[in-house]
Image (tube, rainbow, N blue to C red; front, top):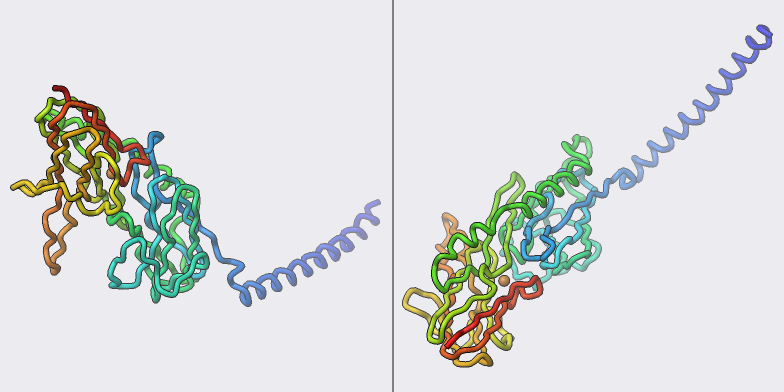
Length: 339
Ligand SMILES: [Cu+2]
């Protein structure tokens, strides 16, 4: 028995070394394939765009996360999580920021590859849409949304010989933590704070925060007082408290041109726009009501924003109104005018 065991041992050992020899050759073959076809090693990363409350009123205008380290050749797929529209856009260094309706010349989705030389943009994305970008060259690339100015990020593309600081699980966790932070921020108090001003409505409130990779914004897309009661002859004032997000106050039929006020709007001495309604069937549109863009040293200062709209109600009745940009998110209100 011992003899037969001692025979078997070298036999098994030979078989094992044969197996290891084959495995070794397969391993070498595998390495050779990777050297010849390095894309087999390339990682596919994923990130989220935006987060929102169940009632859609609270929108995190943010890439979640907004800073990612990858290897040259890797790709990132962004998935839209919200009803508010966003773009995934990489402009070239110093490029003038175009409107979101403008595509990058010569670029056609879906095969997006960005190395800094020509711009790449997804176009307007909505909930469930995906957009993938491949990054073939090392570099640090700024990521922007063309709809929201304070929604930016950075993609660090490293040479494959360098190690990456984080894995996908880390980024998933960051995205979850950041979206929970945004949606949990107590902003209702801020909107109620100014409520003591008589006949005044806050038309949207927001805040912008910086991260190491760029900036994120939170916008509350709601009127602070969705039902307000006044008397005939009274004037109500709407103020947009959001540093970046534009809103409108629109009574009656929505005009084609949302940017400019309707022709029946005048400008008060303090710069606020002013409309007069003589019947619940009348229409008046504020145009874009928004804060001034942030000033930058070395550039011409930006003019003060038109942040206020006033409407005088001359006849009793019920006057429903909307923000023509965010009514789909539920940004609506109504004014009851008593005699
Ligand atoms: Cu709005």
